[in-house]
Image (cartoon, rainbow, N blue to C red; front, side, top):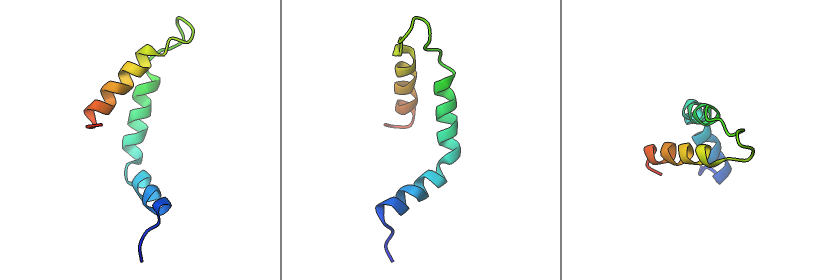
Length: 55
């Protein structure tokens, strides 16, 4: 029996849940409210985190 794409995605999410939580925790630690709509710091942190993951 082959897994569907959704089943594969669900399995990957389950297997990497803790890693995903840590990634999101790192992102919300970056303030973006001053000045309003300044998302550059979070975008830069996201890029660094993704690079560390090899993406």
